[in-house]
Length: 106
Image (cartoon, rainbow, N blue to C red; front, side, top):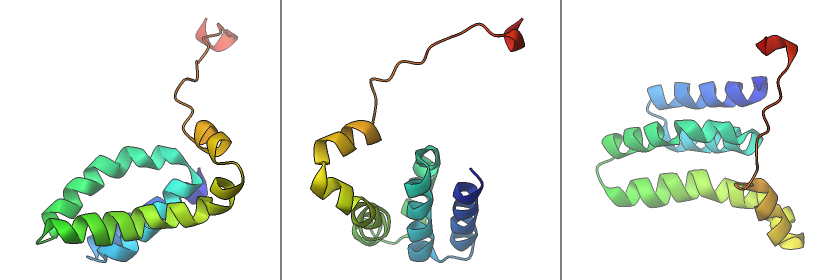
């Protein structure tokens, strides 16, 4: 979790310094390490919409080119060889979490 949060905080620092494109790229690197960073994405989208004069800049330049494209490049070796297995395990939405009573809950 440490390196993931380091990339997330670096992206937040870049956003505060109005470096939106580089901040989106670093945010994408944080997402590539651990997907719980995606919980910050709705707030980031709101900031991107407020900071940009037009929607084209937000959608194409920042969201696609700086956030989604690095994810596609990093996942390309896995998407080419085993696309269905990779996508199924990357977004395992049918996973069931089990509750087990332990000493800590007594």
